[in-house]
Length: 130
Image (cartoon, rainbow, N blue to C red; front, side, top):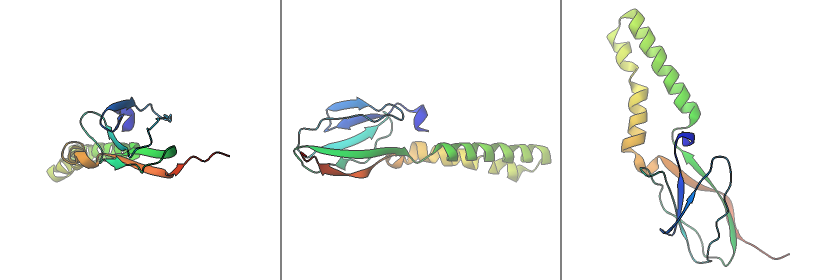
């Protein structure tokens, strides 16, 4: 689902960085305690506080609650339920075909705070000179 969204990273509420797909970006921080927020314009993550270090490296992963596999599986389920309901003329099965669609609409529109997730996949370490 992230392939369809233009995701941006906001650092301390003022610096905005575009997040390209499948490529890391390097962001220089001033050494003070920073706040990270990821947004696509409609959804935004919870604020992530970074510890205060003079020079630090961190690795973060931005994910979506609706993964590509879940999107494909629910689309397939919707199609199968609808075809079975259409061929068998059972109204209940036709109505069940809308459940995956309602699930997506709930996560996309009503559960906006949890749609995008940013999490640390590697701890933030101070860089040491070797």
